Length: 297
Image (cartoon, rainbow, N blue to C red; front, side):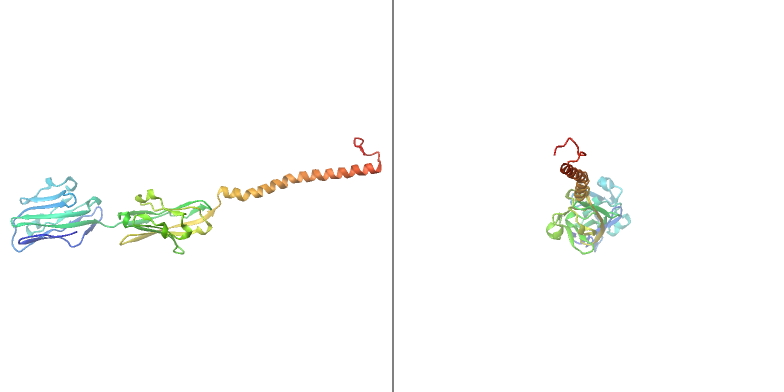
């Protein structure tokens, strides 16, 4: 919380709202003294409120850069020409993510001491990306639809929705730091899931199992923060048959072919055997001398 405190005869003023900066930016942390009479400033300290790290020190009429924490050397300074006017604002250059937090500006004078605090936040970053090409899948198999999130927003403050683009059917919801399978459409329950171990890395890719014909189409990965939204799309374009499915379809046909191929010689043999039997019977009935002698009527 940002606050200011006053000593008899003067008050220390800071900004009413948090400041926002991006990595690499230069930012001004305001701190000024409001006084009706000239003040003899003895010391001004800028510190991190969370760790009490000394960011900058002005003492005995001059800056003391040798006293500041090494992480702020060469990056944090006051404006010398503004100090006589009671302006002790801090210029912080080359801002990093580690610089975010609350800073305290404490002013010590012969009349007393006062302080104010300034909160520095990193500007919200949100970018979402996915696959550039449609993906294929095998019927009955599984497929991964890519969605990568680059953000500095905590997971607890993110909401990620996987939706069918054409029908707005909710495939999967991630909210308040965890998946919400109870919210997804019943046709995707038990089939659509994220990769829990990948979520802290910003990977919100969707794994879809037991792929069906009706799963074909476009999907949207929509990411929300308190102030921004971003999306990417993925397309499941073609369902192919796996090797197992091909064998299941081909096996009956193969078996039928084998039966047909093996039955032809058998039929021919039986037919010839039957013809020969008729021949023998006719020979016996006619008592012909042409009949084979090896057979007895």
